[in-house]
Length: 204
Image (cartoon, rainbow, N blue to C red; front, side, top):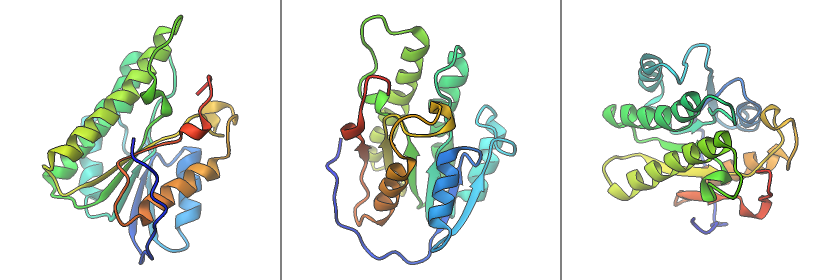
């Protein structure tokens, strides 16, 4: 966990790629950023995170972006294959392809506060799988940043439950997440892990 730096800088127009076009967070980010930046959204209809070839094609399209925000993810389901593939394996593979393309983007992965606390008594298998999938992508991004093996700038945003269709529009306002991501974009030194622990609850 990295402390929240309140310092920001003026940011010129950026090329921003948002992954997860059909989700509420991606749409909210698009509406916030489109006024000042060139923003393109990519959805699962064209770039399915269950398909390696689709991810490779996506990486070839976005590697020159200044900012890449990955909002793709699967919430709790009874299919651990999909949860681990979409929440962890696919983002790792995308990062590998971006590195192959020598991308210098700032990549922001939207994770989950569940990565910080993966288990408790009587947890369901589905919930445990979801939590560990989010912990996995966080661990990979942290290790990649520490390895100094690419020119990528990396951040993981770990919110607890916020208002979206995945959560039945329960939780805190989606604008909090949007504003946090904008702050990370503007930070002179990108935050590696930004945990929304002030908003945690037992249903995160």
